[in-house]
Length: 366
Image (tube, rainbow, N blue to C red; front, side):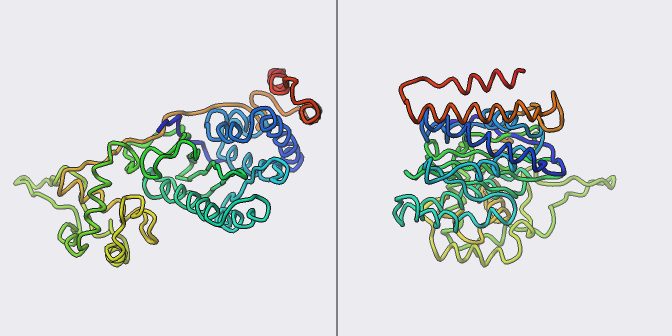
């Protein structure tokens, strides 16, 4: 599984001005059409899944140089810009409550795309698992609030989703072509500027043994797990009155299992999940239960999971805030028209090579 990166972005207030967002939609439409007609839908998905390309694309559209809004606004512009009947690509989901409409939007696309009911269910499952993995299996303190799910009429898909923590946001990228397992190294990239000192990453290859033992612990009677939970960390009193917290490994506390946690584990025991992905997919198997099982695996069997932050890359670009230059509306509009003309030329004469992207690059350097 190839991982290209992870991104943390500072949270900025406000939103894109209406005049800018309208242009963002038009320019996003032009660039997308050029990419699809010249390179195909699969290449478009691959580029969206690349955190570097996605960030540069956001900046070309003219949004914040260094902001969480690059994700939500760019995905919103693409959702409005892409006509699924023309390009064979559908964008679903979005920010906040809109993200929860993703399964319904996927189902509705069955009226446009020739996808079987089995494939529709598979797409819904992919959307659900990508969100659950980034919220529960990667415990980096970022809570998801944005989920965009792109897919083609052939069933290929990409996820771009974002979590929030304190004053920062972190973006996660997935590409169906490179997902061999939802629970082991599934990302095409995770984007961040701030790296966490301690992150439980149950998707890391180093966590493989912990994943296996977590499943075994559940498939055995969960009642056996109660003995490992403490009300508070074990302490060793020293003669001169100081305290030393013991043991050195992460303590397993009752709070780790969460309210109703034992009932969830008992339900999992009844269902006997075949593997870790099946365990994570169960309703109610959230961050606390996943963490508790990982800690017990480490405590009892010495199977230490990965505590390394999977984030690799950070970004700094320019755009809406006037840095490194303000958006020139006249030039922006001419660029949109230029791309539109290039796409029309491509539709009429597919053999001619397009230079739209190069011309767009020249525009950005003005």
